[in-house]
Image (cartoon, rainbow, N blue to C red; front, side, top):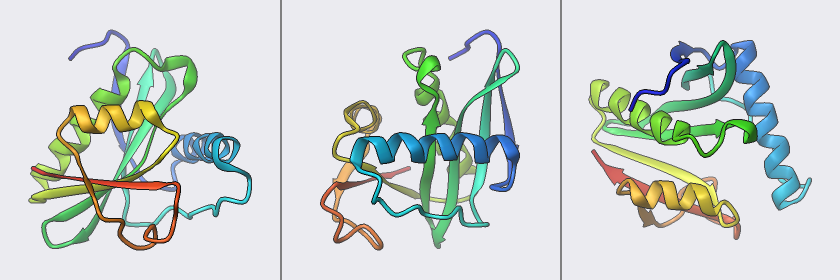
Length: 149
């Protein structure tokens, strides 16, 4: 898929644009699920891809190695004003390609019960519900998914 004006670049979790986007994501989730949701710090092993549209950072996705062959998708986010154009789908395809290139054979992720668009994206791309894994096993609002690559 090609969208004019889109650029993708690798970024560390300390990148200012990544921090801006993940902070916006956390604020959106707090509004959706309640402000008492724990803020999870970005792990230094997460390799982010930053998506810009006409020079403006509008999305990101992280890939974190978890175990041999297993990776986890972290902090996939597109700003509300850029949704509906297929950017999340593009980010998902990019992170899957990165996982394959890194020798990973399975990806997992966690999303929330109220994030119906995210759930639809993942299930439409072959992710299947899986039992919750730490630290989400006791979170009623968490749903976990996985996909063999």
